Length: 189
Image (cartoon, rainbow, N blue to C red; front, side, top):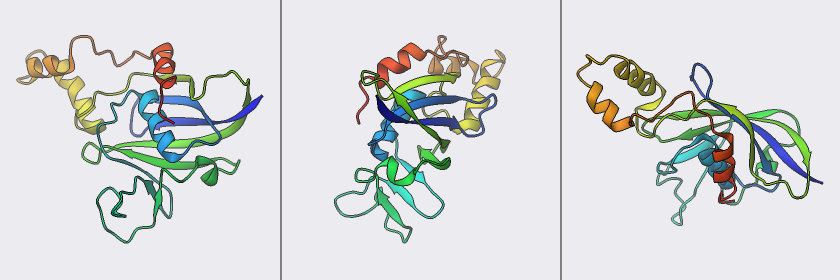
């Protein structure tokens, strides 16, 4: 048997809630957790990101010692060098994850518990979840809901453009656990 963190990822302000419950190795770095969130939620990993705790930020620190190219006075922690276990010591804790600094996709990350899993258990692994991830670059959660208003109104002047952009196959209700776990099996750790 081996141990894993059970983590719940919830897209803030999504109604009904878009979420995933995942198992990650105890030795996962915050960069690794970023990749897990990307794959589990269905993001494309093409925007800047960071984690935010009460008194510090966690993210990629470039070679010039800037955090995402910003040079400010906030306390910054290197996501490559910091393990999730250094933050989560066993009791429930939460941290925020911010993806795409323009669309502002905020996620609540709840560290629920440490679980025992079989030695051959794939990690990371999605246990369950709900709903499809919004498409990239749709304008954040509010743009996502605006997209549905436009798609639901064939007379809207942007209806055809929106339908062409999002595609006729997009299904907000879809949650494909098998596909998510296939992606997680290739996840960068």
